[in-house]
Amino acid sequence: MSRFLSRHGAKLEPYVPGEQPVERRYIKLNTNECPYPPAPGVARLLAEQKAREFSLYPDPEAKALRQAIAERYGLRSDEVFVGNGSDEVLAFIHMAFFDPGDSVYFPDPSYGFYGVYAKLFHLNPHPVPLAEDFTVTVEDYLGVDGHILIANPNAPTGLALGREQVERIVQSNPDHLVIIDEAYVDFAGDGVTSLPLLDRFDNLMVVGTFSKSRSLAGLRLGYAFSRRQHIAALERMKYSFHPYNVNRFTQQAAAIAVRDESHLRQVVGKIIATRERCYRRLQELGCKVLPSSTNFLFVSHPVLKGREFYEKLREKGILVRCFDHPRTLDYIRVSIGTDEDMDAFLGAVEETL
Ligand SMILES: *Cc1c(COP(=O)(O)O)cnc(C)c1O
Image (cartoon, rainbow, N blue to C red; front, side, top):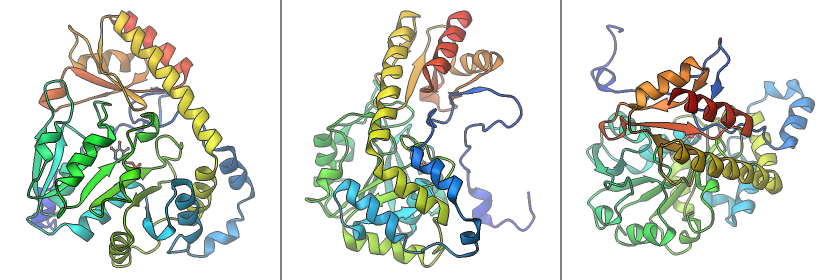
C-alpha cells in the first residue's frame, strides 16, 4: 500500500466487482449482465460513428439523451440526471444530499456499494437486517432519522416491494430523501416501479441503469429521476467534479436504446421466460429458490454451501456469484443467460448434485 495513502483512504472497504475473466471462456452468470445484444440501432451507430467526432468533448448537459429518456418515462428533461453508470449517479447523490455524520438506512444484505459509499462519504450507516424470509420490512423504515436507500427489486435476493409499500416509506419520511434504486425494475412486472409516486412526493428519487435490461453495461449509463430542484442539485455536484461524465458515444447509443421499446420488451420477455423455467427446474433438483423479480435467481441447496456450489460450477466452466455475508453463505446468485447458457448451467447443477 502506498505510504502516502490518506487515513481516510486506509479505512475504506472497496467494493469487489464480480470477475470479468479475460482468458478462459466461461458461461458468465455472475454479474447480472444481459446475454442479448443491445437495440440494433446501437450496432448501426457503431458502424457509422465518425471517429473524427471523438476529438470533441461530449455535451456536458447531455440534452438529447435526457430528452429521449424523459419522453420514454413521461417526465421533463430537467427531471432527469444522467451519469457514468448508476454507481456514479449514486455517488453524486451522496455528494449532493448527505453530509458527513448523517445517518443512512439501507437493507442488509443488499447492493454492496451502499455500505462502501457510506464509508467513502463519512456517513453513519444503518444496515437494516432483512426479515427471515429475506423480504424488506417496511416498518423498519417508517419515520427514521436519516436518509433511505433501497434497491427495489433488491439484490442479491431478487425480491421486490410493491409500490404501495414504497409509498408508505416515502410518506412517513417527508424530511428525508428516499432513494429507490430500480436497477432491475424492468424484470419485475407492473406495480413495482415508484415512478408514478414522483408526482406526489418531493422527497423521492428513483435511480436506474442501462446496464441490465438494456444490455449496455459496457457503455456505462445510469440515471436519476426526481423533482427539478433535486436534479439541479445533482448537476451542481457534477459541475464541481466531472462535467463530461457521459461520453459522446454513450450519449448517442443510450438515446437510441431508450427509444427502442420493442427490443426492450423482447429481451425482457425472453429473460423472464428463461428465469421461470430455471426456477421450476432448480426446485425439481432439490434447490431452494426465491421467487425473482429480476434477471437473476438466488439459490441454495440443503447440502452445498454457496462457495462450494460456486466452485463446483466454476470447474465446469460456469461463473456464478457467492457471498461472504453471514446471511447468504448458503446461497449463490445466478444471472439469467440465454436458454443455451441456462441449459448448460442446469446440466452442471444436476451433475454436481
Ligand atoms: C448493477 C447495479 C447497479 C450498478 O449499475 P451500473 O449502472 O452498471 O453502475 C446499481 N444498483 C444495483 C442494485 C445494481 O444491481
